[in-house]
Image (tube, rainbow, N blue to C red; front, side, top):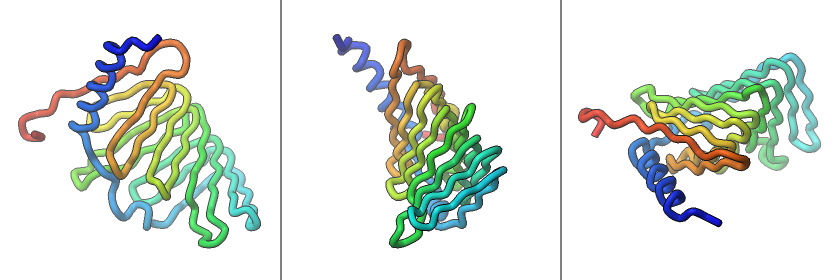
Length: 171
């Protein structure tokens, strides 16, 4: 049975987090060149899929990803990549979110980054730090363009959030 009082508290905390840190990614990141380094690489032109394994690093503008394994999926008609699937222990994602140099820093066992939708999903021991606010959960979804989060625990335990009070200059 759902504890509505506890759910209400979590939703209020999430609303405070997203309203106090509503931010957007840098506009030019997705227009920047995608650079990938790894120990091994495989590319299938027919499916538009590339697989990278071993000490994988990705950079695109201010976006940085590190993982043990990365699958890049591209659309066949445009040859533009539209999804990055990364796994690691942990896989890491960071991105500068504003002109002041603030970054989102995150990690999880699995990362799904859908570039077309600007959605970042973290699965398994997931963590996000944004301007000092932290979220820990089994699953975290960050809608980059909207600056909103969804978090949940899939197993035992609960979502853990730590919110940093805003300074008077930031208000």
